[in-house]
Length: 228
Image 1 (cartoon, rainbow, N blue to C red):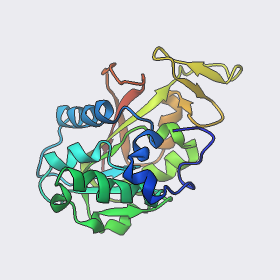
Image 2: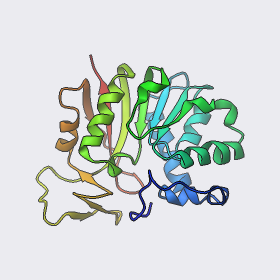
Image 3: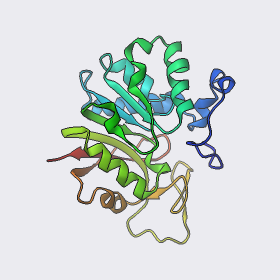
């Protein structure tokens, strides 16, 4: 997404959705990253009978593939941009005949991670390319509210741009091996693992580092396990 545009505030128009501008608006690599998400989720334990919530689901880049895999009604998505949800349901899902697997009430527009609105306990959650657009305080709110709706032993699979724990704050810009520039003070953000450990301090989560290194944009991957 163009960094000069706030993704939450800019609502796409109908003609933009019809020409699939939303695919570029959320960062492109539509097929590559979408399929990659599902492959990772299956690798790390997702089963068709599980209920999953996709936090920052956007226009369903990964959602389409996850919805196809899961049993009917088991996918739930939340995003801050209502027009992206509209593009995902009324354009992308309709074009591949998958609307029957997703009740429209399973998609919610919410900027504050009020996941309790679904009224569902989840086995799994995914936050792909979300933490790179959030401040640490927003990530902490997300993890706190997610902990209320995930079963003990459930997981969140998350991606983020990683920097080392001793990374100096000057300069603020880092360019990773994929040529993606990230920042310590603005979107897209990079964080150390210790930063994200701070986000779950005194919350019922533990972090499991994953060694998958083939993210198309060079992001690192984590599993957060819900503990008692």
